[in-house]
Amino acid sequence: MEKINLDGLWQFGFAEGKYADPLMIPVNSMAAVPSCFDADPELFGSHGTGVYRRTVECDGRVRLTFSGGLFLRIFWDGIEVGKSVLPYTLEDYEFDSGKPGKHELAIVADNVLTGTNDEMFKEYYDFYGYGGIYSHVELEKISDETIRRIQVIPLDYRTGEIEVTVEFPDAPETTDTTLAFDGGMPEKISCSGPIRRKVPNFRLWTPDTPNLHTLTIARNGKSKEVVFGIRTIDWHGGILRLNGQPLRLLGYCRHEAHPDFGAATPLSVVRNDLVRIKNQGCNFIRGSHYPQREEMLDLCDRLGILVWDESLGWGNRIESLTDPLFQSRQEEQTVKMVRSSYNHPSVIIWGFLNECASDNVQTRPIIKRLCDAVHANDRSRPVTFASNRCENDLWLELLDIISFNTYPGWYDPNPQVSGIGNITPRLTEKANFVSAPQFADKPFIVSEIGAGAFLGDHSRARWSEEYQAELFRAVLDTIFTNPRFTGIAIWQFCNCRTYISTQYFFIRPRGFNNKGVLDEYRRPKLAWNVITELSAKYFGKRNK
Ligand code: ADA
Image (tube, rainbow, N blue to C red; front, side, top):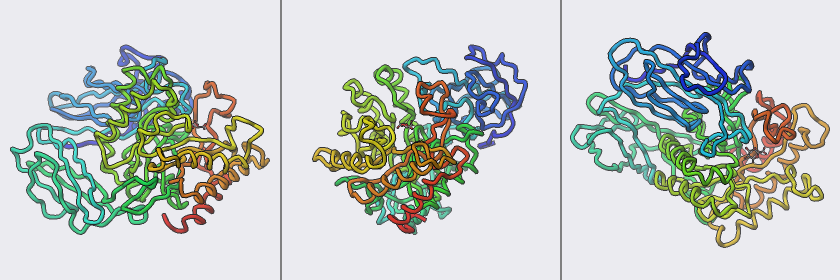
């Protein structure tokens, strides 16, 4: 056994509440892995502990890898071998699996929020926090020869030069290691530091030509392959560039969610969503509001969709933002995201802490710490966060890109100045604000904007398909005729479930955030056609 995939039917048990000894919960039914237990209509809305159990045949040192939420504990033959408090994060658990033979693996996932400041998920978030196993579960037998990680930094899009870093658990210089591109001739290398190479016969990665290369590192009969793309990003003079060419971004904020599957959306759903976005002429997805799954990023690499990947946060309040444990969890999650998704050419922006209290002076340490953590682990991509404090934000100077979430025509503070006619003036004010000398060098993205709409409501009033469609017409016409805007991530691709108990229940009918351009089952509202029309108007066949 090198690496095995443990997806399939597992034994399952559920009990209300958090459990000190979850293995006492009877496993009297079955669950698919990956899956979210509260996507099952019978358990939707319940706060409890799900226990997933199965046997695995293996021995010796192993590494288990998967993501899930909201709190995870891992037991091997009844002994706890790992835990995670970082929902949506791809985590590794290494342990000694013991003698050859059958062993029992139990993954315990609970969705019980206690409301402490350090918790990464909060019930005030405007999306539902599912309990379960969100990604594939993989088990790998490891040794000192196992390559832990390969990082590829594209350095020059004109020459195909890259920098490769290989991480081994032991001193690497002593052993023979080889490197090969695209299945070609292996070349002997020393891994004592980063290696620079020009990729033979390289082909550039762009959204129109998403060419990928492979790199294989081998040592003592063991090998690891990674996929990468050659493309570079730079950001200055207020312009974001890919391979030296100015970029304009048009796309969506997208939740990894579906009413039938929760956060464990099957690959077919993810694939269909992304192909639709691409075929509409869009080139951009903001992965709101947590690290994106590997397979989502793999698809974006192959389809040529640009991604903003962000760590988990939503409207976090000062009590959490100043809590040392919350701060270190945020840093840990952000660093894990950057390190695990580093090689994806589709990822062009890192983000964190959507709409935090960034107008409060006490938030500087956490924001600076997260910017620094990203920069320390990746200098090749810009960092941002989506601010709804906008002109009152105190920390825009720390960011590489300025991103504003703004809802003119929907959440208008003054009903006298309201509606579609309010959109162009409000957006233009923001573009003028970020044109001031201290911000002018930074690209500017509208990271959210939108309106709620019910499929089938043609009243033309607010909440109708027509109102939403006309709002997006005004938004895109404003953004793509004003060069100060780098682009837009429309809020949002499709409706998503939120907490029914949320204090905002009166603006979340049916327990959904209804601002999707598609409904939760991906049925299009009128706005879909308007966005398709305007993407053709402003970009022609650019991204198809
Ligand atoms: C915020 C938030 C989104 C969503 C949106 C809305 O901007 O970032 O997650 O809640 O508001 O629909 O109001």
